[in-house]
Image (tube, rainbow, N blue to C red; front, side, top):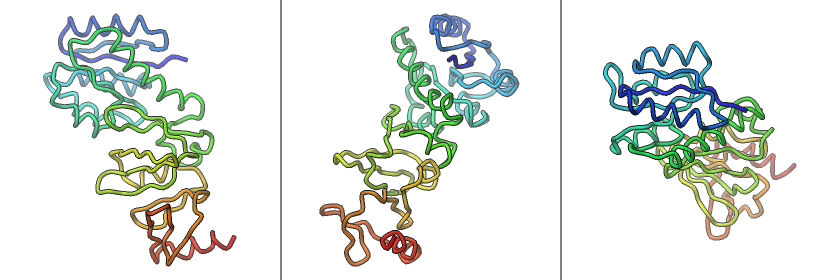
Length: 239
């Protein structure tokens, strides 16, 4: 498989470097390189580009502004001399953040994240933006946390908690993963077998073993079942 990509940078030496790196990477198909962000956006839409290597400080539009104008199907790897935008890149769901000067090994690690991410798409159409239907075809999704992509197996999830702008995923082995996304967004990615039992909690039904006074008990942790979801949950218990 190959991933159709472009590179955007207003500095010719930086653009030439990343062009060479892309051409050395077998699973990347370079469609074009651009100094002008507006032309790059047009190319993404015209050529169905899946991945864009994007500088941040550019005349006209910044890389962050460009990332917000791209179709959902196109993912971003930032390549910039500035470390200050790493957190903001996380908010626009960038796959990775390369800080100049970077070498081919660092580039390759970032490119592999794109390969892993789009590996889902080539097997089952869209990755984890596709909702329950496509999630059922896969046993896992990739979620970004701590500037890394984490493979999350549905069968290992215990329950999920919403905390402001984040979700915290609890796993059967006791580990946790904090991800910047809404509970609704994650809910849409889950296959059958998960149930929302409270505005802040989703549980994997297979893990429910003890219910006490309207709460699901996981060891010393109590997950509440709210009135809004109580009837559906009771139907599950009686089935």
